[in-house]
Image (tube, rainbow, N blue to C red; front, side, top):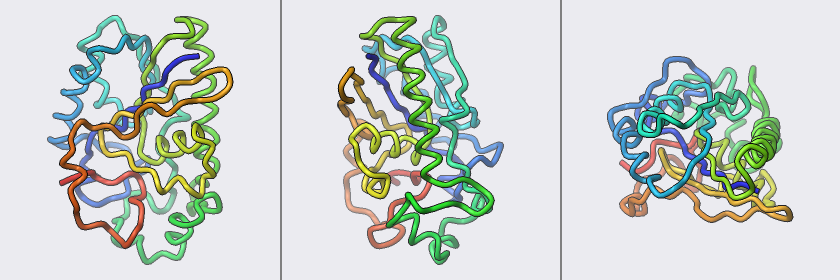
Length: 228
């Protein structure tokens, strides 16, 4: 079965503004995010990527654009099921304001029970994304062979939920996973089990330096802005 390269979109204007973008239209990459996207073709130069699948949201489309320009033979597909979690009424709000919402404690500690007002549940988010990956695995293997490698560009919570699925982790543990903007995560699927072979690789160890966190032990909803 194929190897899946999961790329989180580059840093966005919402990330740097401290907003939970969700599916709000018009959220673009910021200057750093554009530079991260421009570096992506070089980072993936040794990989024979056969297909690109991307979330419909602008920040993901902008992230894969340099790769598609560098490899004009690549086919690009938009996949609604790997779009950002529908945060409903939380979309577009300041993350600092959301920390006091009673639901935030559930999102952090018991995400399988979290459903966003006017939006979707985190459980439904994981289910649709995992179904999309399984269908794309079958499609890529059919069209390109069992050793093929393909890429999906998606969002922090989506990628974290897919990693949890691959590792057999309950969704309630997925907040222990971190993927920074434009990081690369790789999952090699086989007939019997997936293997996580890269997680949140940015190639930049500066992101490991201590820094102030948004809350004691809290995971950044939506994925956060990454290292300063």
